[in-house]
Image 1 (cartoon, rainbow, N blue to C red):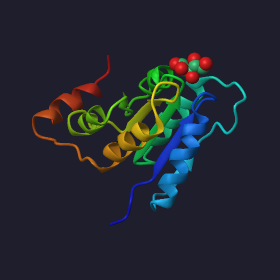
Image 2: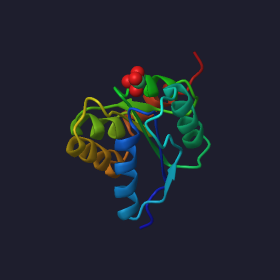
Image 3: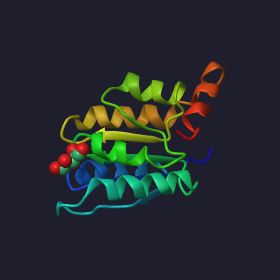
Image 4: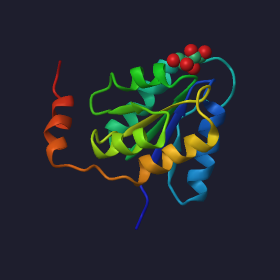
Length: 147
Ligand code: RB5
């Protein structure tokens, strides 16, 4: 079965973890879109959260991975874009449930808070867990309604 395209974006605090996850996804056969940043030079996380969310919302990638220092700023930025459902997670159970219950299409990680092994586990759960549908479908649809 073909694997989905995964877009990744990070600010300077997240670029090392983003690069590590990108390379591992490539090695696993995923198509990846690396939207930057690509150095430790200081950048603004809203720019990268927006770019990632627009890419996923436009269907250019099925899923996204957003990384900043805490994951907080970049997830707030991503969730401003209609069609983006970004979930900030720190554990594998949250990574599974954000797919099963919320149909999250962007995984947000805090590179300064989470270990590499946990980040890997979260990403695997995020990519491999399907949306459960059923009673969750109407709730997710409400997330797409204008404020
Ligand atoms: C950058 O220093 C830091 O503020 C950013 O990566 C992120 O943690 C913001 O939420």
